[in-house]
Structure formats: C-alpha cells, structure tokens
Picture 1 (tube, helix red, strand yellow):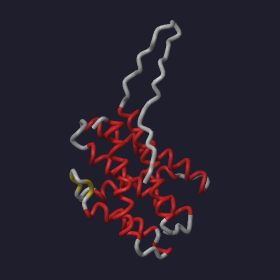
Picture 2: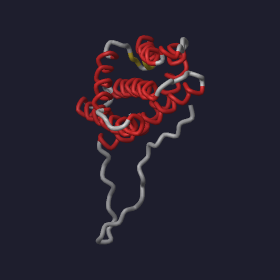
Picture 3: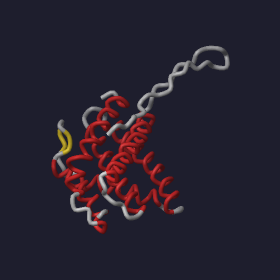
Picture 4: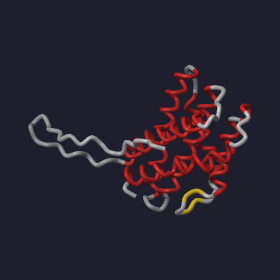
Length: 195
C-alpha cells in the first residue's frame, strides 16, 4: 500500500507586524490528533480501495461507509494501544478523543454527500464507542494486534458484505489489509507523536 502520509507542519518563517520573527507555538496533543486522524482516514480509504481492486463488491454506499467505519475504529484502537504507556493518561485521553472527533466530522461530511443530511456523526461515534468495548479483551503486544483482534475486524467487514457473498473477506482482511494498514499507521504515530 503506497500511501503518502502527511506528518509535517508547514515551516515558514513568520514575521510579526512589528518586523520580529514569531516563534512557532508548540504543537498540542489536539494538533497532533488532527494529523493522525487525517491520515487514519487516508489509510482506511486506501484499504477500502484495495478491497475493491481485489473484487470485493460493495453493493451500496452504506456498505462502503460501514466498512470505512469498521476500519477506522480498528485503526483508532491500534493507535490507542500503541500510545498506551508511552504518553501520560491525560495526553492519551486527549489524543484519542480528538482523533475520534476529527474523524466524526470527516465521516459526517462524507455521509452528508452520499446519503444527505442526517445524524451521521452520532452513529459513527456510537460505533467507535462500541468497538472500544468490543476490542477491550483482545490481545495487543509489541508485535501488534493478536489473532482475535484481527479476526474481529474481518468478521465485522464480513457481516457488512454478507449479502454480496464475499466468502473470503475475513481471511483477506486479516492476512492482507491489516498488515498493509498497520505499517503506515505505526510510521505515522512515530512521526506525529515522536514515540
């Protein structure tokens, strides 16, 4: 998966109205969350495109958006597990909440384009919250997510695509898409958060 991640901030030399150089303000956890969220969206979208290229058929826009939601929820979980113990609990909470809010806005804007206006944000946030509970007992270590963690995403995508008879979707998601999504995500977290 060749995804070009955006992890750097613009570095122009800004000059104040009095002719003195302004120092760049330090990046907050919310700033960093915006970068992570933007790129999580890109990774999830690339995962969706890869699946389409592998002839997994999404019969409706709802199937496409539901699949994106599941992949995003998985990637947010991976982000949370990756930063656990490497940043303070306060920063971790700020980071994950800000990522979720950025992604909820992005999902809402996209859903408004596909399905018209509605309460898409609430549905997305409810799914994210439910997945936090669902993934809570799944193993994650230095090597990444355990079997049950990966299988759960495969199962959720399989349920979404059940009516289109994609019988190999679980294996494909577990063996192909997850490794291809996690690699740039870990690079992103390292670059954006410095961990």
